[in-house]
Amino acid sequence: MISASDALRELRDGNRRFAAGEIDADSIASRVHKVGMSGGQKPFAIVLACSDSRVPVELVFDQGLGDLFVIRVAGNIVAPSQIGSIEFAASQFGTRLVVVLGHSNCGAVIAALKELSLEQTHRSPNLRAIVDRVRPAVEPVLQSHTHSDEATLTGAAVRANILASVDKLLHGSLILEQLIEDRELTIVGAEYSIETGKVEFFAED
Ligand SMILES: [Zn+2]
Image (cartoon, rainbow, N blue to C red; front, side, top):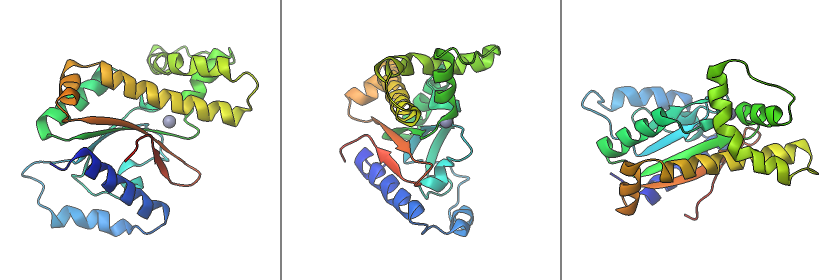
């Protein structure tokens, strides 16, 4: 399995190609036939991303089938089933990198902000389960941005929500904590810009 820093480089390079419009849509489909996949999978990165239809993970990183283990949920929240999926992939495949991928103008983050501003409440307990996981991350942002315009506030809240999910993964699982301690797993946050198609990683290398 490739190292976390090599995996990060692959993702950065792939996103560079995507943002530059250099990817060939046919190439993704053609990789199915080239690589025999029935023998198993060896995804080089695990990505926890939002379900937003504008953020198709394999495409924005220009990766093919079998490359990424992707978990998508509105607001890229961390609940037990997301942690379990990551534990499974990290221990089963030896994948070294986890990326929490949020994005600009995230509807789940905006919903949490609106609810905090008492503009809207969610009656569905299922939808509430998502918003309730976003709210603690964005509440301090709302308090510290009382004079900011809406775009600045939303941008800061999106970042805070990504970092909160990273933090929950860093401290929410004994299995993941052990892998991190053994230097076998790295977890980083990243933000996809719907406007530019570029992913900014919150990591040094
Ligand atoms: Zn979203």
